[in-house]
Image 1 (cartoon, one colour):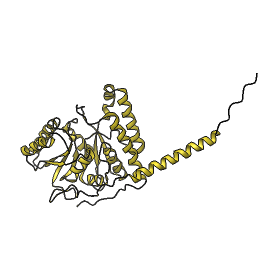
Image 2 (spheres, one colour; image 1 turned 180 degrees about the horizontal axis):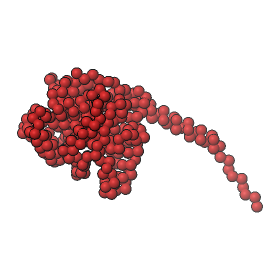
Image 3 (cartoon, one colour; image 1 turned 60 degrees about the horizontal axis):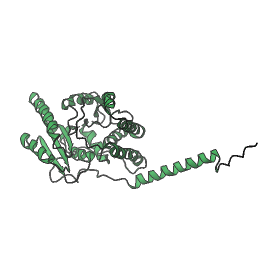
Image 4 (spheres, one colour; image 1 turned 45 degrees about the vertical axis):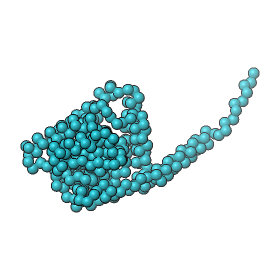
Length: 321
């Protein structure tokens, strides 16, 4: 008995492949157009953050080190970090009187007593050593760090998280990483603290879902933006003043993915970058919501690449006084 003929395919395989390729190209162009049209242009200087004679990164440095601490609802975790950081900095200054520093706590529109806690340290150590900048509205970690950097007086600028997850004494490790990059091209270099060496232990403590999200994020970072740094998200980064001026003047992302854009800009500007292993402990109270925060970061990574690729965002060299 003869079998009935198979129904004819609506499209031959070559035609179907062409249709899919056309659809993919259309979607890519559409996403590029959306990324370009919705691009937010950040101000090229710190005028919106400054009032009167506030310090500016455009001025010559008057301190050896500025420590910028972005803080959002950190009344409980901030004291531990500040005690450790100031204890180290005061000891270092006592041993070397020529060493000068400032700690800038940027209160990112907190709804708790973060500003009050930070001000207590300013009163204890003096406003010349501990400064507090309060933003009326929450801008995100990137926006808070950017504000602090623009008001820094240090020759070197350290980003440090308010949770104290990284031991502050590890600044000596990132300083050594910065030193090993000398001679610095145009005075620019960045040394990044890294938790990459702790990845196997952290995976053992995470759920499969969070591990999958982590690997997916790392792949997108590598594929779209930054290929040479294994851990872009560690909040312990040391920059020369010139490198901070050049990178943060071009920064657009204000939330979790700002670290990636920062390093993407640095690589585009051919700023030398070191990655240095640091001690790190997970502290309870993270503001990162696993699924939605990772989804937002994934979107931001795609838009970082597309917006620079389409010219919606441009890199412009700034002049430091």
